[in-house]
Length: 217
Image (cartoon, rainbow, N blue to C red; front, side, top):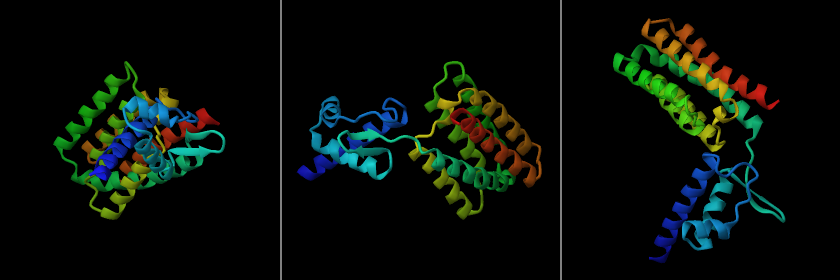
């Protein structure tokens, strides 16, 4: 019985700390004081320690000698490789999905894109990033090739593990991204050929990467 309760608290602690890392409340380099986190959550230190070890295994937390647990920085090289890969495989998935995307899908994607446009007024990069994933999911989820689709999902999961809300670093890119989304939808609506759609999808992803690299170099 005790293990079940401890496991439950460990899971809650893991979810709580990870959420704070992802939304930027705990920034790279932030020192994770286990006793303070445990006090905030109303737990003992034990489940918090278990949660921190799990986050370390995922690469979100680093243990430094004489410092303790700190939030890991974003690895720019890993981000670069992930975005480059996504630009290729997501572009292919979107092109393969296009003939299978119906009017209802287009309407759903356009509604999400309008939410993104509204989000620009009081910019929330975490919310914007989630909506961005929702939008692109509509465009690639109908891909009939399960292997390509699996690679796309892996890419998005890797971005999540990198805590990559690119738009936090380049908020100006967000407005262009929304406009490019609409252009992609129009291409699909018009029955554009697969090569044109794939190229547009790849350029859209590459433009976000380029904006990030320009900001951080």
